[in-house]
Amino acid sequence: MTRDPIGMRHCQKLATPLTKYIGLASTAVVLGIVGPVASASAEPVAFGDFPVVIYCEYSGTTSAYYFSRLTGGNAIYLTPDRKAGMITIDGAAQRIGGQRAGSCLGKTLKDLRTSGQAFDLPH
Image (cartoon, rainbow, N blue to C red; front, side, top):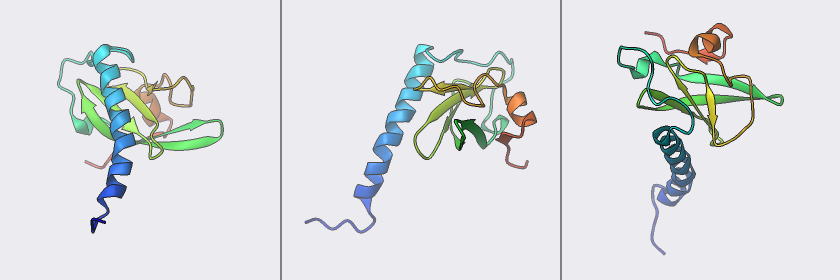
């Protein structure tokens, strides 16, 4: 038996499902399945333009979606239990990989911030 001093087997078990969802989100964005690939804004979109966490409710359960990746103007958010969502600077929030319509679906970043569902890091 090979020694595993830092728990690499455990890390690999966690990384595989996460990688699957990040890959799914990226593929959906590239194929245009989930909406526009770039923001309508003329200025480049930066990581700091998006909230670090967004809270969404579905059937009495509130989930925290953490900012994970910015690709082609699309911000990808993931929950610890591997749900995924996407939003652009000017667009509406969309779920990736499911049809459930929670409290974030269709809201813009402005709507999410106004409703107290989006939280930014202090600048």
